Image: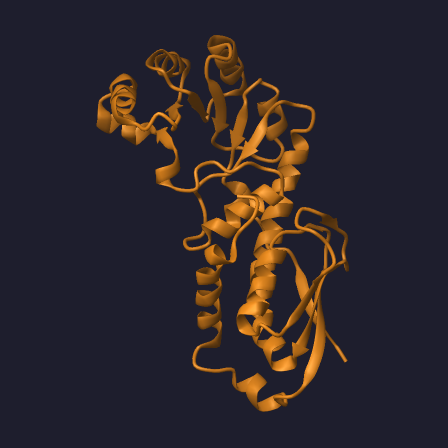
Length: 280
């Protein structure tokens, strides 16, 4: 999810503007002359990885297509405190009515990208890649997952329809790993891979024997994961998941797993501190 088309993000932006505006902006409409032309800058108050410039630009265009937006950096770039993200110029009323929604999207996406990059930096020099999860804010999944990619991760499933993960509850409901995978192999489109969640080495062997393409190692110790790598010997991809933290992710990668998935880069990411400054 490297690039979001306006068709994808317009409904999200429209809902956010409707939520913010209600039935009118008393302050802007009564205080600011309709013909007032202004310019404003969005800056960061701290070091960040930039994400969401396309979304913020789309907010300004949605409010007023005549607004001119000038970007001063790219998504994915590192910006130091007081760095300039973008400038916008045109009708002052339009800029003011766009301000909060544009900053909300930017702050959220920059925060996710910054948190993600911190994890990715820990994996430097290993073969392991960071994945996100479906633990996203309802209605915001597309932009939150786009921000993790900006930060250097890869997307896991975007939704239930674009991948197969046989998790613990599926296994229980299906009667075991082997019958679950067997049913999938009978009917699943051949373009989709099968991932199976496991919690111990016996289940790893069972998933491998059943024909899993990817085996998730859920909350296993580093020693168990290293043994799983030796057991599988490249016959399936291995994904470590569960309890991944910034101070443990490097050791997990060094076990030899192919992927590490964590929801914390989204659900626990702190918003970046950004501000819009009007030029007088």
